[in-house]
Length: 546
Image (cartoon, rainbow, N blue to C red; front, top):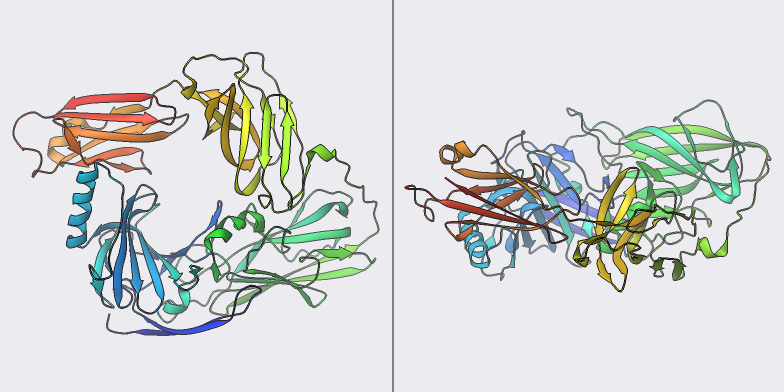
């Protein structure tokens, strides 16, 4: 732990971001060989993976260290990221450690005091620079598997204080992590632009395999996307690709370099990707700095000559390991049907959009869409339903920020209006997006254009004691909790009428309280009470003794 890593970070200049350089010294966060289960910028639903996931040998309890001199600036316990620490360093960076098992004793005691004082499992408080100073290599916590985690590991985010950007930590640890395997492509999609291009006679997306030998016939404006993953030696994990470059006939048309992003850019991952494919063209409303077009058409290609167009993808990781894949698009003159769409259902990305239908109102502020969108709108009516079902679009379209949707209640089936909620419909399933009832309408904020209706939730959460006979022996009180409609909003537990510290283990839907002998006598019977409330106010109260 006494060795220091010196990393020279050269962030290439991109539009809107100045070129900077910094020499920074860090020590490893663990005292075991560093291997990764996840890297920076991996594509996740609605966000980028913000840091590095370090493997801990599939066990919890490894010592976790500060990377440099600084101080612990913030402490959190959340249901999503578990036990968390922010450490601010004097070198201009801050790290976030997530999914910890616990903190060193002085912080752990303060956290526990906060939890009982505020009667909450979740914790969030900031610290003065003088309260918990740390030096490089000082233990600050133990690695764990807390929160929404799929296995024991240590997650570390790196924030550049001057900009607030999340930056790739891998340059600081490159001498401790070996990599000689190149990224590999596994799929290509061609995107004919609606009303402007065709692929093999159609305006539908066309999937092909990398390095396909048969030319694909197209005409007009098309875009391309690639599915690819990076790999490292000694592990079966798949990682995000650091750099993707597309050239057409030897000219660069697109480049992505996954090295940093801001909080406002995070949801722009939805504009860049299509499923698990990375698009090699940029939507007009997407300002993600890690993407650069090499032409004036945002990376789109005009197939306007009857000849072969040679596409080459170059995939590279941070260490320079490189692979390439190729395919040919043959220009063949074909009929391109113009886009015919009612103006009412044609949304513009750079304007405010407003849609009003009988029983429904939708307001989409300017800057919410990434590109112009022709809606495929439809209404379904069920005579016995609470409300009509509105298909705003046939394909789900993620938005950059939330917009307001109001749906009218046709049949007021319950008098308690708190039981109504807006539900997103996907196949036969419905998922709550919340909402409040007022003046005959339920209004909610939505982040996706899809299919929506109004539903009613009058069913309280299900709460079941787990292996009650073992509570004394294990020293843990465990309940399984589940709400299948609107989800759990809150919970509270007591022992003998006094607040008890129950943690919500979201991965297993369990509430767990470790019996504290300082607060609960080991003698006699004790009464436990757990109250669980869902997002429509339905309540379940469970009472047991042990």
